[in-house]
Length: 449
Image 1: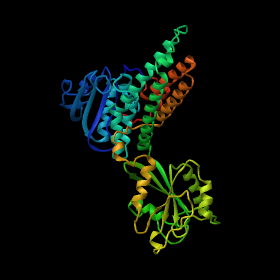
Image 2: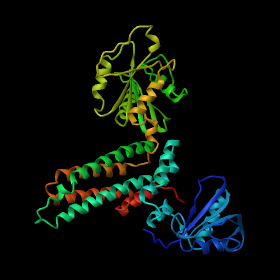
Image 3: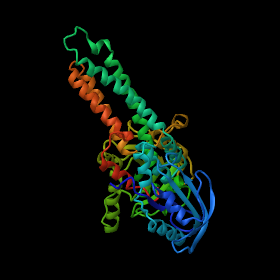
Image 4: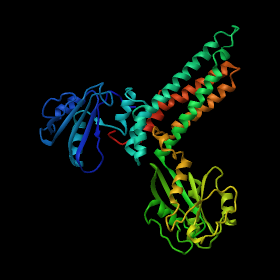
């Protein structure tokens, strides 16, 4: 771990040419280094125009300097931003001058890491910085801002405070074992743990939705050859991405496309039809289909509405993962000619569509959002961005609280379960985090952030 007394520098704007580029400095020498480069003194919290020069007084560029004086800065250190023209070469020359004057090149995410270590933000807010930068949809960006503004952390800290109070009460009762007082019953500890568990379950559900916004979901189209998977893919995307033909086996390789549905990033995969074949190339495509099925969050099982579910669909269904979400879609509604569709299985509640004529596609959209928990727009306005580690930690809290209730008759074990719950919940905001975890998180940031 580098010394927090180091002064670090980096280009803070995206790679490539641009109208403006920023070189950022942070640390105790930031002001002195910047004033060696700038043409006049720099005043805190004011933009000032400068000629940027190297140690030989040769002109590098002209631009603006901005000084954020500690502790009133993003990192909690003195921070200087040098705003120059956005040419990559100009910015690299300016950065190298900062380094030659006594700074070092910042590591990925080191500015944000310093903000965390200096208690300007907690760990979930730090992660939200990267999530906001990498957001692929408007809803994901809004959710990242919910976390960055501290809404997620506030909810976690409120629950943590209640948990600490419970733990303190239970542990205090251990100091008076001879008293004829039932501290657990009189303190309504069971009811309070149950209430806390319900709150944890609610925030876990919201965290899972936030994780979906960040990571997206893989949606795979499967079904017999020539059942209309490629046509449905094109309708969902709103463009002709996949080749559509009457010849079975047209799709050999899975066709993957990105789709934003209700603000959720979706990796949509059209697959080769699952069937027995002697075609070597088609066999490879079918193998890839099964690989995609195993990593899918949702499967759309496309069925010909004229035949309904046949032995083919039954055999494939038996081989699917048991916990997979399946949407049954009956296609070719336009070819029924007024006849009833062939409904042969009680467990199937199909959506009827005509991929060719773009009929019923909005019902497929609605069902996808419903399975993902995003069908009610009003209830999802306050979703915060979350990561897998948040969900894992919250699940651990749920398990420990369940054990605490089970061990109520043994206060020693109950107190230990509450202690483990507190440690797991503290990991979300980073008040209880290992250096290895911090290194892994911040190494995924871009340099300059």
